[in-house]
Amino acid sequence: MSVFSSKALLRTLCTLSLAMAINCLPVQASPTPEGAAQDKKEQSQNETNAKKDPKKENDQTNKDEAQKGSEPQKDAKDKASKGGEPQKDAKDKASKDGEQQKDAKDKAKGGSEAKNDNKDGKADNKNKVTEEAENLYKKGQALLKQNDVQAGLKLLRQAAALGHGGAAYVVADCLYNAKGCPRDVKEAILMYKTAANLGYTAAQFAIGSIYRFGNGVNKDFGQAIAYLSMAAGFGDPRSKNALAEMIEAGQGTEKNYQKAFKLYSEAAGQGDTDAMVNLADLYMLGHGTQKDEHKAIELYKKAAGTNNGKAYYKLGYCAEQGLGMKQNRSQAVKYYEQGGKWGCPQSYTRIGRLYDLGLGIQEDFKKAESFYEKAAKLGDGTAYAVLGAYYEQGQKVPKNKNKAMKYYINGADLHCGEAANILGNIYSSGSLAPKNLETAADLYYQGGQDGSLDALTNSGNCYFYGLGRGQDYRTACENYQLAASFDSPNALYNYALCQSRGLGTKKVPEEALKNWEKSAELGCIPAMYKLSDIYKKGSIGAIDLEKAKFWQDKADKLTSNAAVKAYVESLYHESDKDNRPKLLRGSCYEPTDLIIFRF
Figure 1 (tube, one colour):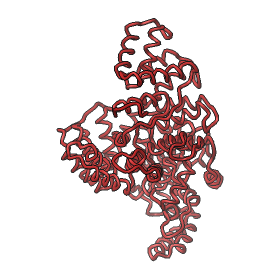
Figure 2 (tube, one colour):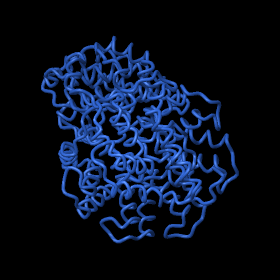
Figure 3 (cartoon, helix red, strand yellow):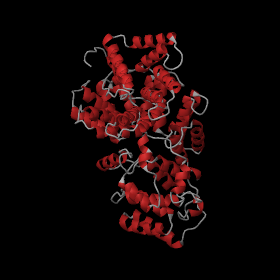
Figure 4 (tube, helix red, strand yellow):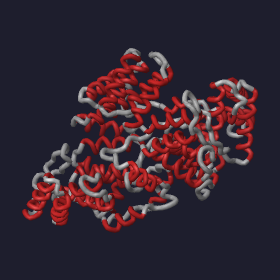
């Protein structure tokens, strides 16, 4: 790569390499659920197990839970390995889960206090539990307050066995979050399910979130949607918001902005400030509703008025970019500072970026680094990824491979999809660690699950070539298709290639042409050369020399350097002759490019 002297050419070269398959363009990670922060070493082990591609292995814990919880689970191999393939109707899955949705209100025996109080997570419960169960529940709670946890849990377990949903939830909460007792995820899951099936909405939300984010278990979007739908049916605003997030992202169901908008509106109307922020995002983007930046700003400010850190973070970005308000980077810093203060560490990462690049403020890398470190310590995996990139490349800090690996691993443990993607690149190439294609494939899968479109595309490449996975064109194609649905130019290119050849999907050259055009419009240079060749030869449709020249000229302009142009053309022709995308690791990226904002 040293033959290219300018940063611009390095960035171009990276884009060109990645356009065929593996890339390092960043995507923010999905947020972790409430209460997910655990002992770091234990969390890392649990999440490593939970992240492994279910197409390769099933988690034994899940098998035990399924048997004890009378809850048949659909083979995770057929689901999660597809990188988030939309699931079949979640209601079908819920009905298999011990008929948990069968008249949940009649089953609700969560204690005489289990009223329709969504704040406390208690579903409407007209049935009275036995006096014995209620007494055991009260005595158990009293013992917990006296810090006699073991004795308290013993009584609460007895109450749960008698049908007290509140008692089952308290036991689950203590065991899952290690409140005065050793952490026991297996029993916690069973107790959450017991309480959930008794109509206890806090348990439904908790177990739904656990399956959604894969904390201690394999991710299972189908079960997540089933439990969150139960709680949303009882009117719980948190569950409505979480369910809408999954629908918006197409996790376990078809992406539907209109449905997401409806659920966000309902939850926001009930006072859920996270739903207000998400609703504002849809207004800002015009998804599921008419675009209205001013309405979005109003909602952000309303949520920020309740000290919602994410709302301040969004306001900071709007001020930084001039969206819905006048551009003012000094004001942006103030909003970001409030965001960090109220629990949104990504806000500090954005401040670090402003100091790093000198945007609206004096460039100062020491200050930037301090903000990155602050954000990382507070749980932003992206900040760890940025620091890792600096130490890997030796930019602005002494090169340190050990530090780089440590930061990348920390970032991946905090659900930063791009950190996992970079680690996948490292293990696939053997650059900072011994080459291990199976580990690389696991990390790509993990990164895709945590929101990195690049990792999702790379996971597809592993299946396409059989690297660390059995060769499977269909699964590869499904990964490309999902990433392409979020406008990943490289995934669009690969998906089009599959469509044009009938590899893992139907042979539909006309649809392939559309996706190559979209990929080219998003800046994928190999797609531009591909289009030029297609229109020149008329291989799909009629010959169109004008369009052929247009795409050739555009690609040539972006590859004006002769060495870069020759390199790109070699990639294109090599991938074309064997009918498969060329699998390469891209390593040319600027650390700050990892900080990507998404509404």
